[in-house]
Image (cartoon, rainbow, N blue to C red; front, side, top):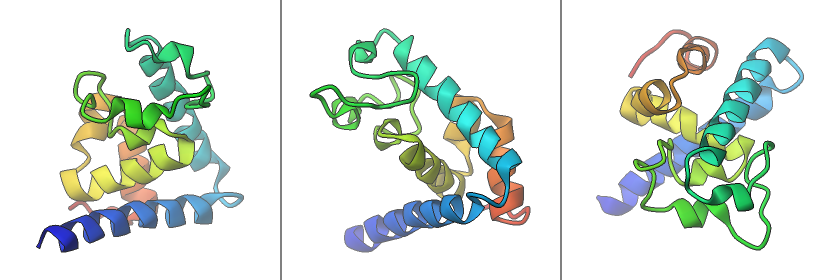
Length: 132
């Protein structure tokens, strides 16, 4: 069962990449929401006291000799992250947000990222208003 659970989580994450890719060039308003939330998210990490400001820029996890997402593993709750992997770059942030929406009812999007706009966009644009 463990293997199939991880496979399901990975499938939902990859579905997030597919949704992101299909939106590019077709819905700039939606992409602007994701870009703004990503910028706020990374700024929050920079200001969190985590020490990651040495390794990140406002564009996100641009690594300078350190892979930021592996550094954050196990520290997700301490630094209010959707997941450690969501710090890797904007694409992984969005895929992890979709995964959170499906698997956790968007709890981390609403409570950690504090973005009702991102939650509503995923709900209405990607899932046609369906909640899980």
